Image (cartoon, rainbow, N blue to C red; front, side, top):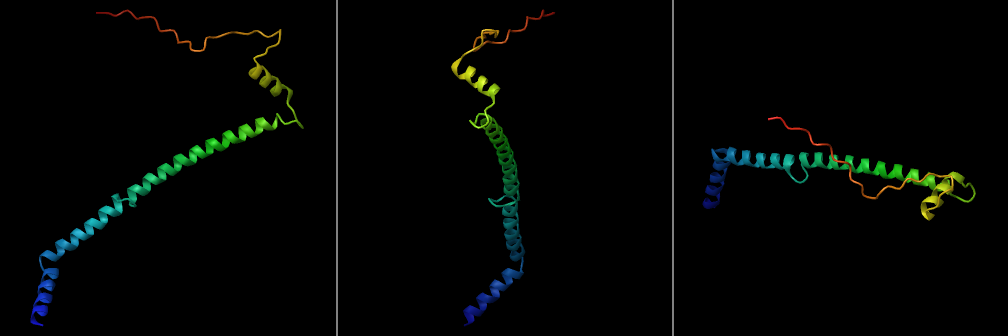
Amino acid sequence: MSLLTSLRKLLRQIALGAIGPFVWGGIILYFTYYAIYGDRGLMAMRQLQVEKEQAQARLDEVRNERVRLENRTALLRSDHLDPDLLDEQVRKMLNYSNPDDIVIMLPKHEEAPSPAPTPQTR
């Protein structure tokens, strides 16, 4: 029993003595650091919020594109066929044109003209 009692006294002196505050301070610093910079800390939460905002913006873009495409396909339905849109699609898909149309052919990969060299002064 005396060994157990002396061990308890030694641990109590360590906990309340000079080493105890350093140990407790280290524990507090450890948990504070991981509360801010850990995997689920404040900085990770901020990064997740930024990613969420980016994903929401992308979702809005996709939704707008879907609405645009749904409106365009609604114009091509057989019950309500838009003649202008049908004509545009036929010309694009079959490469047709009217005899009265003026067609301007452009090369596929035309580079922009380079600017004229400027005179250098010495």
